Image (cartoon, rainbow, N blue to C red):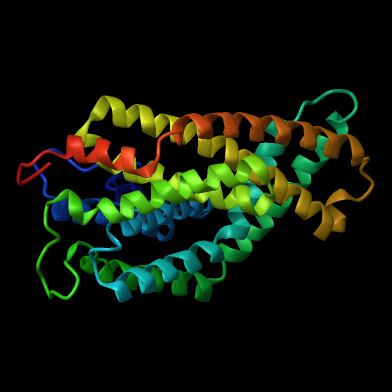
Length: 319
């Protein structure tokens, strides 16, 4: 099969939704298979497109970890913790390429190109793009590292058959009951709500990043459950997408400032103060918008959110 044909057969990266007529276990098996296909596509893309494929791989890993959290209380305890940790470590191996790529984009897209900062921003974007090309090439040409990443993904994909099997059983599918997902869904929502309340008082870089991850897990879980109530669930999904995008841009700017401190060559001969001032203004704006959105979305306690999902679950044998 040619590389082009291989990519044409891949599912859409956002194929995370459960379908009407599926059981919970059937939906999980299909979506999980789709996301592993997306994650492993990095080895089939031509070299010039592989960095973008690395980005898609990382997003697929986040979706997979969100699904694991949805059923973590119903499947094997060892299954959840082992596979979640491996997926987390794989994503970390790919993070350098992603971070440099996104930093160049966020700098060019978010900062004002006025007279005081235009020259510095243009130079920084060019230097970050150069680093991105070098770092991505180094990773993708490291055949041993890429082979290890693919092998680890293949191993977790094989073990992921357990994600739709009831804890303590060999091949008994998860019951198609709301109770199979209720604890995991409530935990993710509750942590997102708690994160919002903490951020209001203490918007540190670390806590903002943690809040973003928790909101993103909930976003992907709601995306999967869209079949239960498509109109309302889509609205929730879009609100969380807006929230996580704001927090993502803020995080990328924070990582960029950190990069300034650890990579002297990046900022050599650049008047950095106007850039730092512009980043500070933009981050304040992003955080204020995110907090307003978060307050609106997480206004209700987790029990109310859980009651809503339980109410639209229905009592049939499938979605």
